[in-house]
Image (cartoon, rainbow, N blue to C red):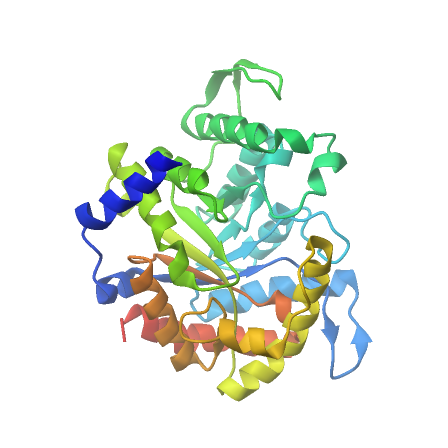
Amino acid sequence: MTELLEANERSQTEQERPDSKTQAEKMQVGVDSFAAQFVDNSAAAGVSASNSIRQLVERIELADQVSLDVFGVGEHHRREFLDSAPTLILAAAAARTQRIRLTSAVTVLSAADPVRVFEEFATLDLLSQGRAEMVVGRGSFTEAFPLFGLKLKDYDSLFAEKLDLLLRLRENEFVHWSGKHRAPLTGQGVYPRPLQYPLPIWLGVGGTPESFARAGTLGLPLMVAIIGGETRRFRPLVDIYREYGRRAGHSPDQLKVGVHALGYVAETTQRAIEDFYPGYAKTVTRIGKERGWPPVTRTQFDAVRGKHGALLVGEPEEVTEKILLHSEALGGISRIAFQMDVAESSQTKLLRAIELLGTKLAPTLRAGA
């Protein structure tokens, strides 16, 4: 831990801070979804699981039409989410889109077989004609461990070992490999091979210095989940990532930083708050109850929606300015992904928010305004 903190101090003086306008011109804008089942408040009726997934694919299709850069689907094994098989949803979207990149958000690699994960995303890459990506991580929920016969005490070693195998599979058609948690590979071929080489793999992280250092050492692009507090508090961790990447000989262009944030846009800030807050308070309070957090209050919400807070909720111009501020605070970011499911909004409102992201927010952000 001391070494990581020392690396952070050096990186602040040795690395040149990217110009915010240049970074904004390169920034990708996207949406992440956990395939939650929504309630259409206007009709006060539940939406079936089948319709919820179909509506998600419709949102991905619209995101492509309004020129958003990327759409991610998470992986959970809980009743309220329908994303236990994200590559199937992304494959359906691939058949109905032309340009948008399709990624996981995140693949819970600790609980998966890296061979199967690679095969599925390679197939998605072929189907989408080279638009597949994956963000791999350990996940913020633990249901997958007992579900697949794994031990939670192996949380760290499972991920490290499986990430090593996944990266070897990406580089080599035939792999010789052995580990503790999986049967060895003795030169078998793994197919199909993706259209892209290498298949893009991002590392999804929360808040541990070791995770940021690992991503930097491996030269993997970084996707940081910032869902509360102040975004700028992650700067020391991002500096650790860049410093370890520099030490490992990776170029600054290779060390991309993306942010996964809770957010929502509407025509006016007041409308965005009215649409977002009730569902946000309900969802975060429910999840927080499992983890011993106090219920969400409007005062807390307003604070996190403030200038330095992590929530990106408002009208497009306001949210654009806030993203640029966050990018500057983190030394430049390459991708911003909005997670809007938490609002439990209707399909109509979510489609309108995606339209505003693509037609109002993204063009301004890319221009560095």
